[in-house]
Length: 397
Ligand SMILES: *Cc1c(COP(=O)(O)O)cnc(C)c1O
Image 1: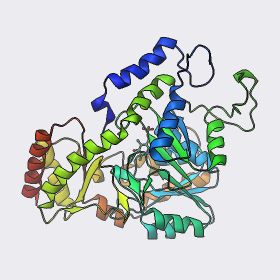
Image 2 (image 1 turned 180 degrees about the horizontal axis):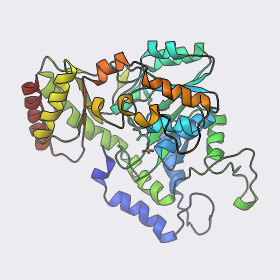
Image 3 (image 1 turned 180 degrees about the vertical axis):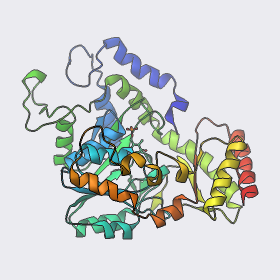
Image 4 (image 1 turned 120 degrees about the vertical axis):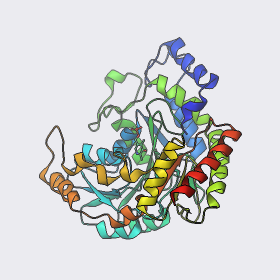
């Protein structure tokens, strides 16, 4: 990752198809588009590759999470349980729907800790949303069991883990609903884009209508369509979908390259006894978009992070000190700094984050380093990088 590293003629051809007809809109204009339906083709490609019965492509990963939660019926008064280690988009989607995000600890999988989820369930909980961070996954069997026993829905934020699988299923297709992102730095990119995955026909229809103003998509006169319920505009354009289509076809190629590079780096770091790799639940296979490991303590991780940078190794993140991915630095969230009013319930809950302890997450995120796996490296570059990384870590111990 990211997919833009390997942009080429395949992407160009799909975009040219769209520019030649001039139809940038995913719906309608049937005659003018000369058979080119890029958003629909991207949906079919993802259905095929990922084994999802239904796919609704939208204009961002944030939109995908928003649509997923909306079709799950999440709204005012509801609580969504999600991890304290994620990208800000995950809680933004909950807030946009007027619901309350309940942040809980992560464990050595770097995703939801089962006991923390159990402890956070209340009468208001509607959805449990694991976020499969940095190319790997939560313990989905355990979460699914918990959701079933409490009549909750399982919505997977798989935005960072396309191509990873759990017990033979692609991430995003295991729960009730799944979400993908194709933003500029993801494994499959189309500039801005995302997808909602589900095996449930009723959810699929809600996603189809909700993401296009609630239009019922019946008949072939858009102006005459009815609105069974309110919706908004989360549509992707044909230009973005065209790039996404070319990229999605290359997913197996991308995962293979990532795995090859990941294996070389992992082998080099395995020789250091103090390096512990992230836990992957039994039956899981990573997407190899990142190599994630733990060092013995926070200070060692800080030293190693600094040393890696000084050695010229880019793309290694110590998320504990980062503003985008960990609760510690989400001041704007804890202070409920919204430019429009929030409900008292949401405000109170957010303010309680200021005093909420995340000891378990601190323990793991404080010691974690996540290294991005690029696809454009040559094999010689990966080998050199592996050597430099191992050296930088050794001198930090
Ligand atoms: C990238 C990302 C999103 C949102 O995706 P955008 O396409 O950038 O809106 C959501 N969740 C996670 C975990 C992400 O990494």
